[in-house]
Amino acid sequence: MHTPVLLQDTIDALNVQSGERYIDATYGEGGHTRKILEKGGKVLALDWDEENVQRQNVILQRTCVGFVKNQSVKLVYGNYAHIKNIAQEYNFVPCKGIIFDLGLSMEQIRLSGRGFSYERGDEPLDMRISLQLNVRAGDIINSYSRDQLYEIFARNAEEINSGTIAEAIDRTRSVKHIRTVNDLIEVIKKVTKNKQTVARIFQALRVEVNHEFENIRNGLLGALDIIDSDGRIVIISFHPTEDRIIKNLIRELGLKGSKKPIVSKNGERFERSAKLRIITR
Image (cartoon, rainbow, N blue to C red; front, side, top):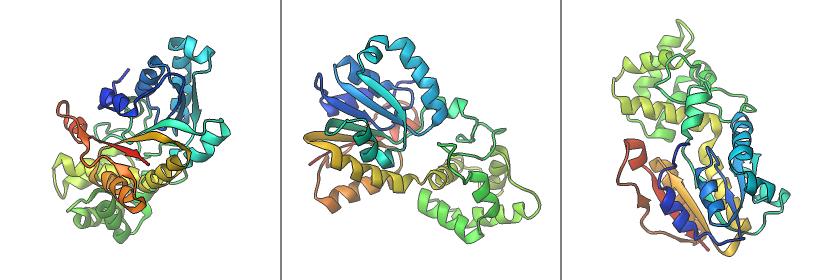
């Protein structure tokens, strides 16, 4: 099982108390949930990937038998943008702590076959976290106007080559459809071979397909409605725009938040980009 970035810092920030209720809004492979259970907390876990929920529930039944039998943990399909309604449905209000880990799990990248990673060249340009969404990344690449593509790349990833990449896509798709991860990478390479640019374009598409920035704001607003008066919301972000949304909401609502984020000093570039913030009322 993959160990989440800043795992111990996250659990310490939650200040888990035995018998209290916690929501893992982004279950993934369950690293945070297991740590909360070990400390005696009860967990309602959400994941927006139907296939991952099915897969992880089987693993939970096998590896966390006692916790499942005692109803200390429940993993359900759901988007954290609707966290308030989901928590109310499962009688999990108020709760002492909520975790949002805004990165994809390694298992989703490896097993989904949906083109989340630019290193999986043969996969289709899908990028839907939930298969109930209608628009795929390939639909955006092949049917959105050049100006719309520019706006998506610039807004969602702050990519300086947004304009020229949008133009290159527009020229290429007039000849043939851009269907796979490798198809899109070949187009980007006509502009730049910089891997960070490729990563940012993939990020921008995933954000657009899954409405991620909108979901972050809605999720945090919902979390504030269901958190206990002395509870804590812990958020791990991986991109400057995500962190900006969080900081702006803290400022807008006059919340108490960590002035400086906790960051990872080790690991790969992806891990070093992680920022952990704590919100209290």
